[in-house]
Length: 172
Image 1 (tube, rainbow, N blue to C red):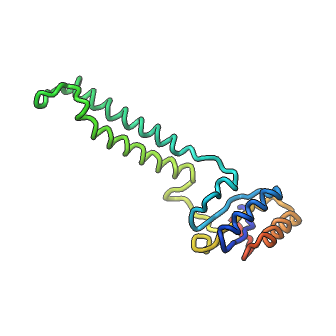
Image 2 (image 1 turned 90 degrees about the vertical axis):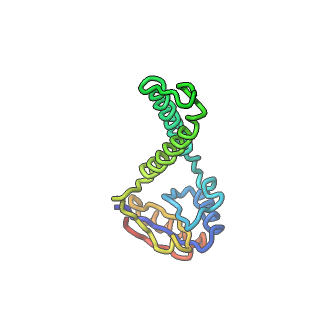
Image 3 (image 1 turned 60 degrees about the vertical axis):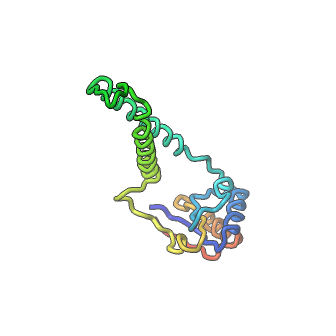
């Protein structure tokens, strides 16, 4: 169980200003929730670029090698048949299947990787701090589980001074 203190903001510019203020004050932000992507949020929070595209490249390369490897083996070693005078290894005929398997492996692999990294899945329990976060509010959340009451009040005072419309505490 975590005890979370969070503030709800009405506007994304207020949220970005509050994050900058929290960084300047040295406050440890647990997470930020928004109803839509906010331009510049990653930079303000100091988040690094995702490596999901690198995993997608690896999955795509695996799909390409699988398609070319299987078709080469089948048509040159296992079951060599001449179709309409074509050679056993006819690369132009392999291109559509290779492309399709590349896209299939990359897309399925990236979805599964994303679900595993984010802890999503059929049996994952969603911890929703406030219903309006996914509707029209922006949220900064602080983990206050191991903080003294003085520190919690300091964080709450920061939320109040930074323009939070609502301040709540919740156990998740």
